[in-house]
Amino acid sequence: MRRETLGGTALILGALSGLVTMALHPTGHEVAGGQGARSIAVHGLALAGVPLGVYGAFVLTRRLAAREVLAELALAFYGTGAVALILAATASGFIATAQIAGLAASDGAAAVPRMIPRHALVPGRPDRSRDR
Image 1 (cartoon, rainbow, N blue to C red):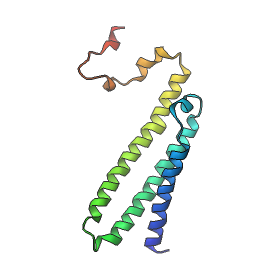
Image 2 (image 1 turned 135 degrees about the vertical axis):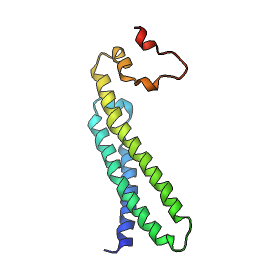
Image 3 (image 1 turned 180 degrees about the vertical axis):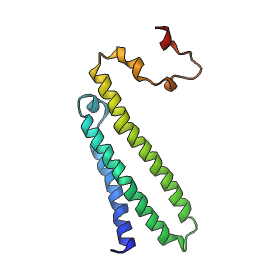
């Protein structure tokens, strides 16, 4: 298979994985209602599609680089977006899903202070969680 064909196919599959991810993406209420496995699967699909999209963009950049000066810059921005997507999918699909499942399984309001990271407190306001 030619590199351009493979790169185009990878770019299309990466885009399709993003569309399927968003079509099946659960809400927070659904995750709390016991659909954590769906959230993990959907975000795993998103993470699997990222390298496909990056490879497709790389092949397209190689093709355009001979006559287009901005092709490399476009690839750099696409790569930055891919890193942001990886971080967001990991945080939303794996970390937040575990946090929501832990909160749903606990006694509710008493577990909230334990689940909020210290760095998430509003700057400039005193940390009142230690006063309890």
